[in-house]
Image (cartoon, rainbow, N blue to C red; front, side, top):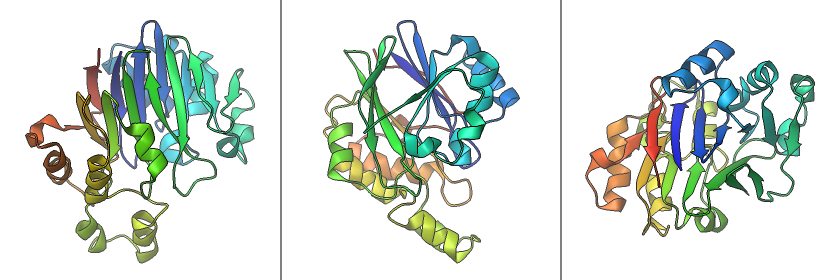
Length: 255
């Protein structure tokens, strides 16, 4: 089992998870040409994808999903709440499947476990992916932690964790006050310290890969995210990987 990022940040997000002959794309916030080019960097073409799984309806996560799925005949999974109001975008996608009540489902060799999160979307989900031997947890758009989130992410072999902003950088940024309040609120995004505190409450005994994701270009810096997470893991900051907006993240082998 392995995973890679096509890119992560406010300008677009997408992650690939692979096990056996199955490859899932988690979100696609990039245009069609950019998505194909970013897949090519990982040695993939759209026809290699078994399905696209969607977290929520914000443009930086869902913006390219329907076009990629329609053009290349790819199955799409999302919650009814995420689909609500944007059904027209998926009218010509041949295979759209619903995630009901955050129930687990399988696509080929991958088990997919959705879970609810506090975020300012209609029915957002984040996910744990597994192949029966290893588990990858992904948490990229969440305003605060919950006991259920921590239970879902405990014991993972790899974790992609939102470190959206540094609280002080956001407080003094050029963003409008309402936007700053939204980002820092209970239904916004995790700052570095909040992500570190969430990480501290997990069982990380099996963790082999830790990736900081969804970093703000204006209100964060990779060194700050790495410092916060490495303090919890008692590791060198360089061990913490960064899912970059432009470069993404190269393949990481879990098993």
